[in-house]
Length: 467
Image (cartoon, rainbow, N blue to C red; front, side):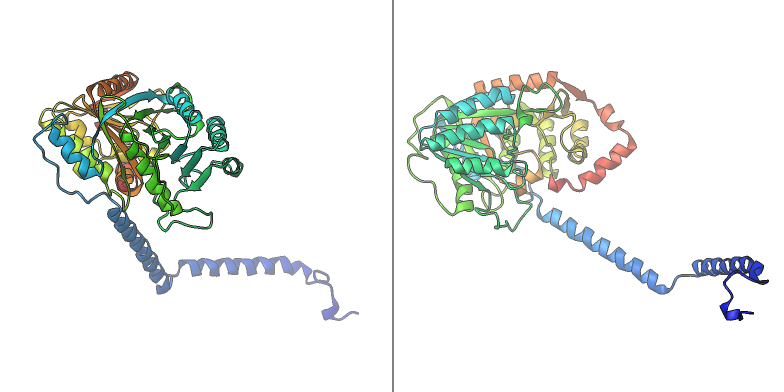
């Protein structure tokens, strides 16, 4: 008879007892696990909770401090002046304060949407004889990109000096092959802030948001447009941008070229000099205009100062067309003061755009203005990307700067101001057409939005310094 140690498991007279033993064993294990779970956790777990609470609190404090330090706060007191934009005192003060005196003898032409501004821009490039300078925030591979690449490359091969400057973040969708096409043709193509790929800007939150095209130092374009297929067409669908762009001829073009040359120097450590870039300019029209730069360390908050100075000068009307309208406390205070002195304030903003977070942060700032009588209109047919203001039917402010802290304090921007009733009237016609394609926002509609939307607006508004 085999020994017990050699009997196979489950064989013999005791095999029927095994299932019961296993069941009792597992029951005992479950009871012990339940008892362990029911016992109070060691004090170390409380320490872990406190540790993570402190970490989260510290991160929140650091973020709050960062947002505060990057907020536009150089100017803290409202601007109070007793003259309007037509008074010579306005131009005499605003020019030096923003870093560029007003010039006479300019011609300003306004274009709407890609169908309006892409053809004259490409025609100007194709007609270039000496120099082309181009700076943009977004450049994406596509149909319009190919047209620009072909035009720029043809001119570079013909001996025209072509310089292109692109923001690193805004150029993520421009394919490497397209960049090499430009360089192979002789275009000096660089990413703003670094001439070589391995160079990294210390402040990665800093962008060049400028949009500039200058041809032969004589013709300039600026506004909100970028080189991307979303700017094609005539704002006929929600997949494209509604945009305004201006063409400038005359002395103000020299200032536009200087804005570009400054960022080119920052990137390449070289200067663009000579009459090929800065030719003598004769009067081309009757508009008074100036163009100035804004950005960290170069005309800090000049764009903000220009907008606020214009608001302070208003005596009749302020008409704002803004893709991202996130006014800070001082701007709200000055707009409320304008309304109190009888100024009619109207704002066209997107009904929708590329950032729900940004729209919520913007809405968080509208309540006081609506209550005081400001009109808000939500543009419906397309994505609204305009960045302009008309004051008293005589002053036009337009360029790359949004009415928000990111443009006023963080990014590099370019702004053109024009004193000319005819130019202002042309832009007011465009503004009125935008209102006709917008839905008015009433105080009742704004106050009656769902509680969760109000909560979202408030939370997003806490981060408004980054918009």
